[in-house]
Image: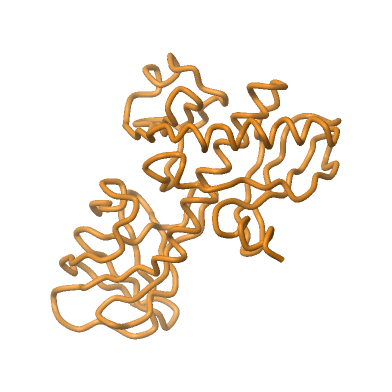
Length: 235
């Protein structure tokens, strides 16, 4: 099991860990540490990138509670000094938290449920189980989601059993089993999620909906958050 430092502090980008195992696969080295600040790919969120002992970390994934850091060059020694790309981490936590807030607004105003989520390099999408979403509805949803940012409510994360979690006012049913990690954004949103998020909603900055389109009987919503949205508006 790898201890996940990013759950203690979502902004932690530098850490030191003990190298406990290195496996060679497909001309790559998969490095396991006792603890890491690197977030692995999962929950719709891309993995962190950065360096370990100055060597690029090209991909990070988790299997059976163990996090694997994929590298082209084998790190030497018993100790790993990790340095995560801060700008990528910040972007990921702004986009992911913004997705929670936008989905919460859809659910509150129109009962729309997020049935799909993708974080791309250029934009984020959510698939809402509503076939008809008008421009006026989008404006109301965007305003509602941004009001959650302006209220700057705190983020709480905690683990609980599935029966305990199902007693919370979740906007989406839990599919996972075992210990469930809950991300709570004030009283705005309760969701089961393994991703990293801001400490307070104000850190998301802004949510901007770019467009919507019909998709398999639902509505696909394209949007950006934080610095991505700021850069979009500045063009």
